[in-house]
Image (cartoon, rainbow, N blue to C red):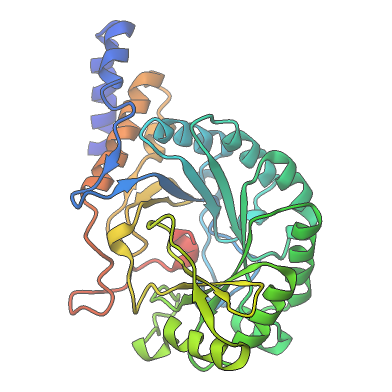
Length: 365
């Protein structure tokens, strides 16, 4: 109630000023870079479009009796577009669409088209499990999708079923093939490194990616599982994965890191061909270079994947009594508030760390 009253009060105040004065007031936030207390400049937003998924990967969501948010609580494409237009004035230049599984949203290509049309936005990317990609790859490409990340933890159907708790490896492989066929040039495969599951998958995945000239990235297992069973011992570190790869396929040569904010440390095979990335979120955190913010499917800003706080913007995007200028200022203020309270790091491995209460599919990958 107090938040709604605050919103209404600000709308009333704005109504007392002329349009010229409102524009002057709102412009104070325009083009103001999103800098947190540690000097990190934020230029990237990860936007979840749904908490629903056609798989039930144990590291992301429960197997059964999942309670999804009703449709009216999920941001519409129009609301997401408006949000991105607002934050683009604060220096956001890259947007990544995630879920849940984003491709279960009807005509996702329409959102991609909307976001690609926003001039300050330089890149619109998508993270997907690939199950529905073969049906949608062409429309996504035509709509202006810049980059594509596809989850692929295994090439073994039994292991896939064990992880995803559903069948569908063949659909994922079809999706990868379709993405290549329609001309996506920036395809990355994401594989989660979980001890006891990943060891036998590492080399086959690397050979698969190398043959197709796709980049393969190994991501350390993080405490975002729905069952809350994550343990440090479950993490197969990037260093261990690299040793397995080099023992089987030869030395890896580090590549220059042009953008320090990118999460992956990249290598190439010394023998030629293929690129391997390691996202060592647990054993080698890169929080000091983080430039990312998140928006959940229901319209809450998170300043870290492991944040305990969220800042709601849906209430402002849907406040019909406010002028557009007042809504813009309210949203920008919420984003600034989130950035202003960002911590130095996620804290995994410290005594103070506790996993977020929400699992990955609710937060957004």
